[in-house]
Length: 431
Image (cartoon, rainbow, N blue to C red; front, side, top):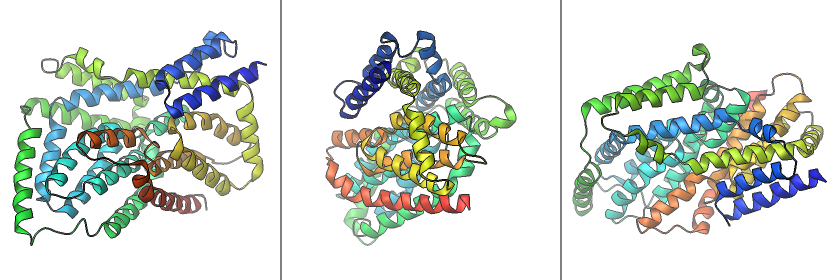
């Protein structure tokens, strides 16, 4: 009876999260409490189920990014990029797309689109061009770039937390499919939207308008007084943090300790300019509680044995590691198109552990397949990832309305192509 109660609680909660009938953090916490109230989990089991390493890493990165953003360095970099492109549509597309991918690898992709999308829309829209292809690209590249590192996308943070994979492990194992995906997506965008990216070098009115707009953007986005000392401290701590992630195994500290150390040191060094209370208020506490509730609900489902049965079924369907990796890649890819990839990855973690228990040899490729499918599959629809939803909301505030179907018409076949590229990578990685 308890098994059915656990599955009902999880199923109802999952549906409420997908259709956003209530705030997802409230639903997750309610579901977690019901698991305890109905005796599926003991209170101490519920606490033990929470992956606190994941929660603490997210919290530390939120604090670090917030303090760093107060320096104005991100706005300054965006304006410099806009000025460097000189209003050329193709250069704007290439630079902002690649910068989005790069930032998303070392910040989180939601923070990245918040910084870049408004600036891009103002520049492109002011030139009389359609900003939608640029926003589409920034959505897609935020998810692609976020997939290459431990901290770039929430699914990777979760996978890293339960497996112990380091920041460098993610980069070493995922840089190749991510690089191939970036090249493929760039080529598709340039070919499909070649008319919208035509150069303006021979059009004097457009050149004049572009220069005026860049001046306007410089004035608008650089109202913050830049303090050299503040920026040096921010840049230094960001570099030290990234180096710490890369050398995590040599240092011997988990990623959340490195991130917290960087955030606290930066807070101390900039205490005169940034109030720590403001930084803590900026933390997305609802997201952190959502993770906590989700971990507890999945532990309740795991206790029923259903996930063990699922892992036996998948492992029993084939003994070929490549086919298993393909199944995980495409199932997670399609699931992430219509569901939040965070709860899906959380559900799949015990499944993969179950499969690994039945196999011998190195099966770590299954985790990379899950990461690629969950992070990249979300590109197909506007509800597939948090960065997608945030980008559309930002665009709407700037007067650019992006419909579900107009985005999916372009992004769905593109995502299928990206997943196909990842399939080829998995084949060569295993063989």
